[in-house]
Length: 213
Image (cartoon, rainbow, N blue to C red; front, side, top):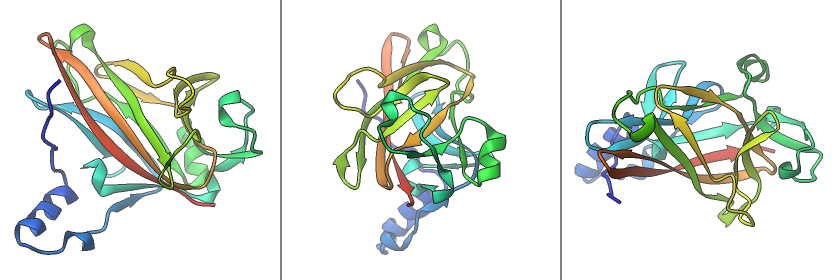
């Protein structure tokens, strides 16, 4: 499996410039996204490498995931729908799969996109997004999941190897509910992978999500 360089976008470019100049890049704050339509997982292929971006549909801006903090406010809390994978708490923080609902609550409407991938490049015209790991406040967590209707797409529960990977057709745009069972700072690591001319291509990125009580 190839190890690919990281594509620098928006703030990443500026941070690299600061580093080159010998300046302190820690002062370069991450962009906070807390509402509107945002494709959290957005894959692109530049002809040689896969890349993962965060694509803000509201402004058209693309970010390197390392340069973004996704914020989930207290307004995202809803009554626990009762699915077994959502734990036993009375409430969960939910980023919904319905844009009207998301806008009414003032929370993110998160997407999973392969729109920038064209047909005829990847085998079977598909790529796979995998949840590699999830932590909350620095420790492995079972408190994150993504689901649509009553079907789980992803679940951070380490007791099972299921619900870690999902395959999507290229040129598609998908939405599901992103659920967090506890407040805290989450680090979610995702990988996108596909096959090009018999070669497995992949890249991995970590996302920071701050869930407020």
